[in-house]
Length: 468
Image (cartoon, rainbow, N blue to C red; front, side, top):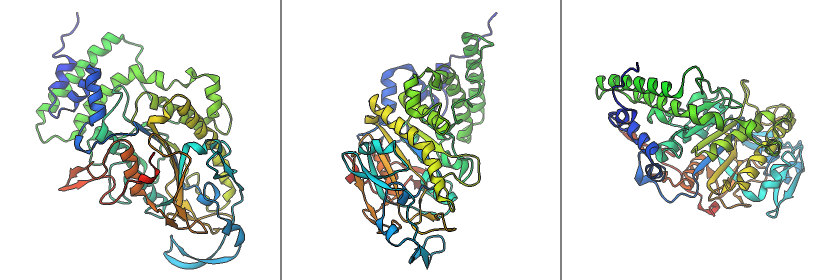
């Protein structure tokens, strides 16, 4: 005999005190409601403007790739190689004479746009006409920890929400069967969970961590019971959760509600996620495009392909991190700069494959792809054959929805050390990315501890010159 259920899942969620469950259910119930959630945002309708893109894929090169060895060639480095030149050193904040260090790699103009790309990236060089290269980035924090936190949260020390959390807070989800914010292989150090955390935003906006190849999501299926029995058990559990929630009164924080909603999401993910993370369903030609099956590129290729599959399914913010469990980030070459070649080989083909795949599927039109690290590196040597951290001037690139393709924006000085023309602060980059998603960075706020917080704090401007 079947046990009675106290109420249906729809009734349960509609009765929940804070209304988030009801909002999610309205999205499940009909396409019109889901469109409303996607278009106007879950929490702050007034911050939403006309979007140019629906989602962001952030390809995080942890450790700081050298701008003067990748996308910002500087003839002065060859001219003054091994000579002492005075610099204001970021790490010490003192002026000192340092040995100029020329790039070990040659640059060549690529594409119809004629952009200079290092020999490190032969595959990305073929896509240069699709992205906008920003050569005048500067940021806060000279150590990896603060700079990585600033990249992700807009703050070096205070606990603030990550950018992915702000995006989902402002826009909600396009696919309520999957998380709206996914982080693939996030670095365990240099900020760790704070890099994808919700901080003081509602707990449901924290990023969902996916393993390197998507195979670390556990309990996606439960073959021991039927779907009907699982649904009955789930609804009974949610009813008990609701009773507990209501009994705790208005003083309850959002963690319990987030836990209840996580069960709802997990239940739906059991139906949707297995097919999304099944990379074997892709054709051989797609695998080859990403370098899957090749020793150097297999790991990162699978992560990039997984990002495309999540983008197809409507995930709002997808981060792919080139990182590992070591204390020293992969691109952090204080000595033996030629190790850059190992990391470039591991990432070049997968990233180019992602761009080409998105483009041929029509997804690049409404997807922003963002490539970059937490800072750049010095034009002078460290330990004879390495480079130190440099937050004063470095390069990132953007491609896709709303970005003007094939252009370069901003410049560093003759040595590639300081941004000097059309400078772009990390706050400016954040503001621009939010703008592309249809979010006004000045109005996307959350009141906490008596203050209205935002991702860009009290700074930031939209870089309209790079918008198409």
